[in-house]
Image (cartoon, rainbow, N blue to C red; front, side, top):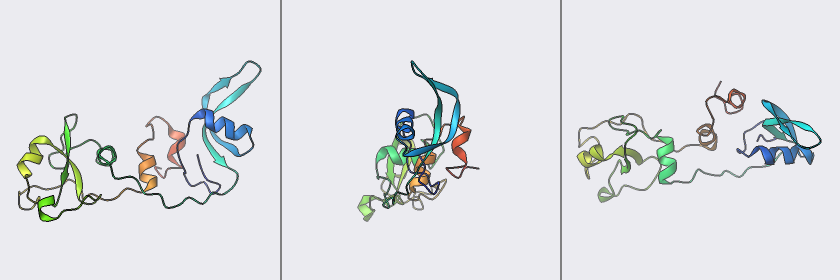
Length: 160
């Protein structure tokens, strides 16, 4: 769902999108190949809708949670790059050294790397992070939900 200025707002269901279009609160911007069929009519299946009035979106932050840290890091150990295994959340600056629970101090790590690092910083443990962790924006968060085969969303989520 896009705001009046084509800014991505949220991901909603096709049912909600069709309801907004029928109520005259949104316009269809992109459709998918299939149709929604009712008893008396056929409607294009909405992929992207734009609401008619501008809605001021408060600066909503992405919630700091285990699920969102895993999503941000791509379910990959940030020390060795392992995927498809059990991952933990690691403090870059350990809590013993007054490390905080922040986006910039938490990364995903496999159990082996987390045990190897222990309660030391990566520099002290002679380990290197793949990428510096940072706080995701709302747009980055929406980009993680995009299906790779849904090409119609890419231009609105700044992926082109």
